Length: 298
Image 1: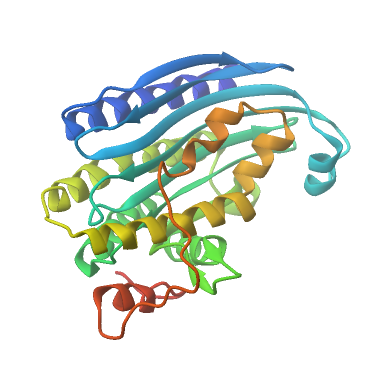
Image 2 (image 1 turned 120 degrees about the vertical axis):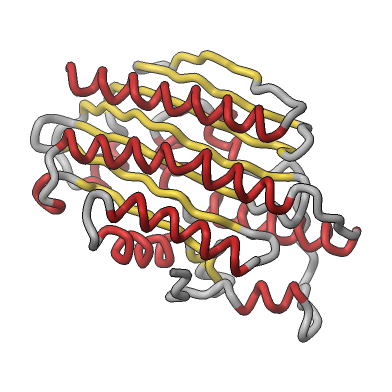
C-alpha cells in the first residue's frame, strides 16, 4: 500500500508540474479541472486546456482506479484473479500551428497482486510536418533519459514504439515514434520496483522540457490554408490510430472509465478527404516518406 501511495503522489506531482509548464508556454489559456469518481472504485483529475495561443486542445490527465477486471481483460492478461489497481498520467496535445507537433505521453502502473504488477508507458511525437532537427532533438533527449537507467533501454523501447504506433491499414507510422514500453518489472529489467518507479518518473519529467522547446522553435511560423488542411488530414490519422488500435483507449472503455477523459486524445478538428495524395517533391510528400519504422534519429 505504501508503494502504491508513493506512485500516486509522484504521478500527481508530475501532472501539476507539466500543467504549469504548459500554461506558461501557451501564455493565454489555463487548464480546467474536473475531479471524477469511477463507479467500481477510484477516480482521477482531468485537466483540459482549450483555445490557447499555442494549444488548440490538450489534456493532462491523472487517474488511480481499482476494482474488478472485466472478463475480456482477464482473458487478455491471462490471469485468474480479478482485483486490480491502476494509476497513471496520460497527455495529448493538439497545437494550433501545423509546425508544432502533436505529442503524447503516458506513464502508468498496474497491479493485481505481489506477483502480477508492472510499469508501462512512453512518449511519442506526431509532427504534421516532419522537421528532422526537431525529431533528432526529441529522440536525443529520450535516449539520455533511458541511458541513465540502462543503455539498452532506448533502442529496445524505440523499436517497440515503431511497432506499436503503426497504422496498419495505412502502412505508416503515426509519427516519428519515441519510446514505448510495457510490463516492466524486476524479472525482465534487472531493476528494482523502486528503480522502475524512478525511471517512470524521469520519463514523465522529460515531457515538459522537450515539448516547450519544440513549441518555442515553431510557434511563430507562418502557415497557409493548405498547410492547415494538411494538419487536419494528419489529425485524422491520429484519430484512426487511437480509435482502432490504442490499448489504453480499449482498457479505459472496457473497465468503465470516464468517457470524456478517455477520448480527450481526439483532435478538435480533423478531415477525412477521399484518397488524398500529396504532390511529388512537396513538404507533405517528404513527411509521408519519413513515416516509416526503423529510422535512426540519433
